[in-house]
Amino acid sequence: MPIFDFTCEACGCSKELLRKISDPILIACPECHKETFKKQVSAPSFQLTGSGWYVTDFKNKAKEGSAKADIKTETKKDATASST
Image (cartoon, rainbow, N blue to C red):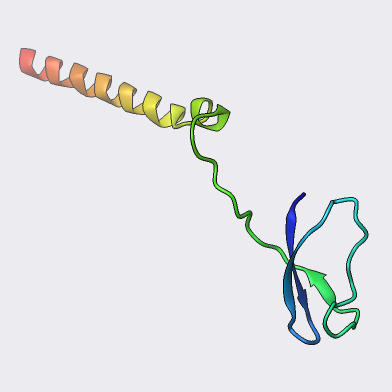
């Protein structure tokens, strides 16, 4: 279940709550009981580590390929310049 950040616009109460996507929307603040409890937009709080599809499939393939192409181009230029 994802963790959502909530803040009350009336009293400033802030909470992190585990909520299912299918759960009803929370609008009543647990502290002041006013209907000003709003879900906040926040960054996810996890980091992908270790080996897995995100490392093996998306790890700098474009950068590695372009760097190799640049090295081959420079080597050809150097060989042409030294032979003339």
